[in-house]
Image 1 (cartoon, rainbow, N blue to C red):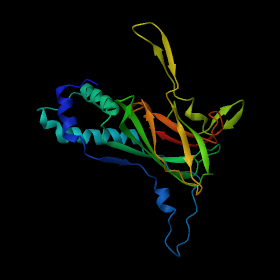
Image 2 (cartoon, rainbow, N blue to C red; image 1 turned 60 degrees about the vertical axis):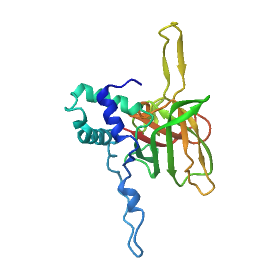
Image 3 (cartoon, rainbow, N blue to C red; image 1 turned 90 degrees about the vertical axis):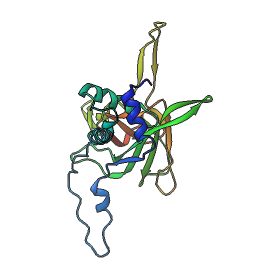
Image 4 (cartoon, rainbow, N blue to C red; image 1 turned 180 degrees about the horizontal axis):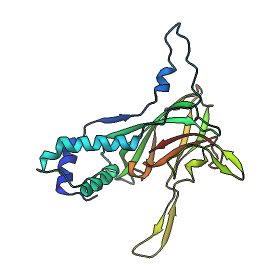
Length: 246
């Protein structure tokens, strides 16, 4: 990826600095009651999820403000937008984003919180060369042991949708993320199931914590998308749980 001199300066300044953006819900903390304390009844509807993308942009702006003096003046709005877009694709991007995962639902109020997934860019080795990859760290509980189909879907939504007159849980996430286009040199068309992730592995205790690496994906590919866990290994099985990065 080609970057301008100002970009190289601030990328060098923040390189290697660990940054974690945490978006856990207060509901998780509320599940841990003090001894003798009465449990609080769960509300019918959960509060809107914090915007991971907005917080990501805010932290990015803070980094620019701290390092802006390195080239004498702040970048224009357009340059800053271009730098942010490039930063999302950078393999050494230090940001890791933690987003809540909820069971899908068909009624009002949202689904049960079952944990989080943390995503961030990484470098992997492919055929002896370095390539970009997306590191996915699940921290889930309360699932049946086994393997589950796991995908990136096209819409940043986890709610129900209507199909054949019936409410379908998780349908708002849309279809699986596909990459398609036309080769500029040869004129050939191509298509790739970009959102097809390795299966999610749930242990006998109902937890899933085994890390997953998705080759070719970066944060740029999954912002304004949703991660969907299906009911079993079948890619077309019902949508069991979902996490929207928006």
